Image (cartoon, rainbow, N blue to C red; front, top):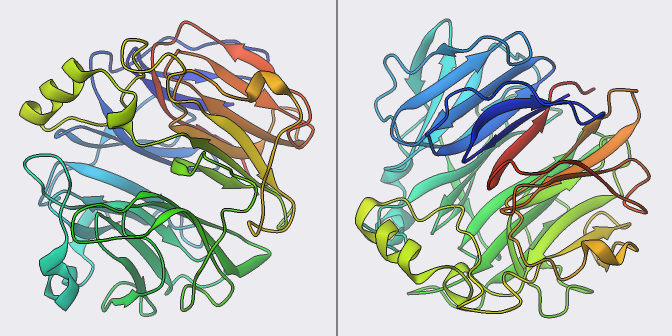
Length: 358
């Protein structure tokens, strides 16, 4: 079972293609995380919702959270009652015992003065948070656009990792190899130069190497990256040709510059006939190199892929899922060899997460 979020609301979807009734329609969803039957989502400038029953009922847990613009969420796999939220303006907060508390002062870091965002009002935010699967005290947080942050003391203090791009989108790891991190980035702009695509670390984020072998010209990587649920060598990635200003609607981008909502953009045929030009890739060496999946129907997609996740299917086997801005959700149950469409007509899919896992 999946939780799927997009422009037509929040709903459940199973591997037979059965959709639940949409909830919270008319909202822009900004982040999602899941663990077992627990899931959390955030709505643009409205806060955080929690379900403990597989998406049937939702509770607003925003309460004393200082900022309602939540851009990233993580559920602690060691203590699933603990939730982390990353916000705009950039801040990291922990939800425990029904209350939020701040996780250190990341804005006191010397690098914080350079953090920004390329679109007005140019306020940086925490794009991703991840708890190490073997150590609840080790946290990773990504600033868009700015720094890769690491805490070894549960968020009390933070340090900046060097050696990777600054347009940071997502970092993933596998519970069987938590020393290996793979990070998806966009293209560095502004004061930052040279970073793009995928980066990889084998020492828990201390040293990084670029890992774009096999991606060709498709090196714009968003949140759509995930390790296989049961194979620490297998990683899936959706990579596009170029940043959204190369292929997205000018009207949508202009409106977003005014409203502050320039996220999860759709391609425009007027801007570029091939759209986002996304291909689904996989890696068999834990992110060192990549290949396009064999099914050519998953190559050169017009629609952007913002959401890609792995988990266990309803039958208990490993699966990978992705959603498109064209309103489709597709799935593979054989390590990306073949794919099926679970749903279409959903409007732009921005997030999806499995509601079961190890």
